[in-house]
Image (cartoon, rainbow, N blue to C red; front, side, top):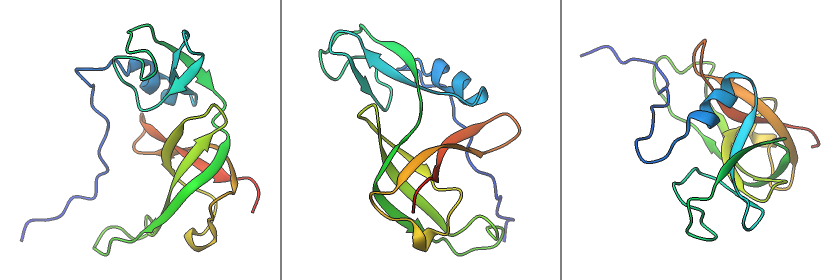
Length: 140
């Protein structure tokens, strides 16, 4: 039997949407989202067009990364090499800017994470150069 690798995927460039600003922000510990200046609304996940106007008039803006847990689930995957990584609490967070983003909760046992809890931005390191947005609960 072939040895199972325990590597988490590193993001790849998207050929349809320029996500370079988002990933450069993660390297700096900053969360950047697309913004439609015509409607004064953020959108996430990144797209080539505004979901509000259908135009390419989009810009990137830094956001605080604070919000409220909208939905949550616990991910349990049995298998070798996953000790210390699982279970994970995966949440959909309604950011204060009005968009939802997925991430892990880093500072709380999965069974204690609940809808409605306030969260702030944290980072889940994939390797020495890459991190995904994640969250810490700030009020239980």
